[in-house]
Length: 409
Image 1 (cartoon, rainbow, N blue to C red):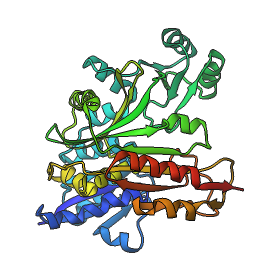
Image 2: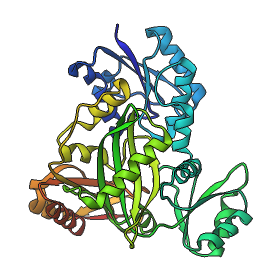
Image 3: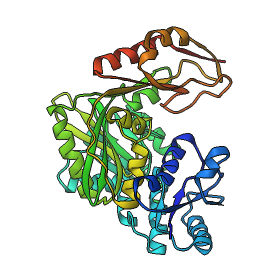
């Protein structure tokens, strides 16, 4: 009998479908037969429609009630679910609720919520003795003023269940803080998370965890930080996986492993953002119970010559790990965007950049002419490069962001 794997996502975006496509491939690695089912707001089309044996459409894929009802319908057609899966941070707590309802193994509600609620997460990390940004959940202007007196300015405001740098912004003075609290109508029913502004070089730390043990880890570096890019819409952002993981990364590994242990993850991928301060100390920004975005999953596979999407499927379905994986390459990604607003009108410098660095380009997506400018720090397009040494990757990225120009109208 095939095992029923239910994959949940609101929309069949390319980055999402890369994980879904890995599930049928479990058959080819001796993991047994599987039946791949889906719950989505918008079913996939074309070749991606053949990834799934059945799809149930729902009006809200972030509603636990909708997901439970859809799972019940799939169970009536195919039998009970073996696993209930998804890769988006915004759906992890709801997936845990579905597992609890049907008695399906996997991350439970308490653990999923601990990863999702950034205030509770930081409380748990600090209780475990781990360094992270000082924070406070604000329910009033008085809370905000008290926290400002404690940490000073600038500080960072974000939703308690935010994702990465989305809906995150910096305030630099008391008047800005008051305006933000009033504008967002902060209350006990609608709190806002405030954090001290961490200064330093920003990195990420990724893991594959099975049975509560970290089996694989990787580190990336951000140039500049995502928050700076959000605040400056003209900046082009780069992410680099250096080939060499040195002693400088040892304390990040120790902190990252301890954070996963403190939050209680059994099987899955994690993505942690952390800072190296000027004095050499590190601090955790936050950690998510999901694969990383910003093409880091793809880049991690390229750096170690393995299929990261299949590795995710092995971890969350079977608690399996097929490593170890040797870090053989440096990989980087340049995210393309430009100054101005409106729609993408034209691109300049693409042929010139291609002539200089095409031997290093592994994957690229150019901005689409006529598309509205993205409000994401990931920009309107990207180029992923790979080489044996880190300096070559950084040089190729520099060429791309200095040569390619995106114009809007």
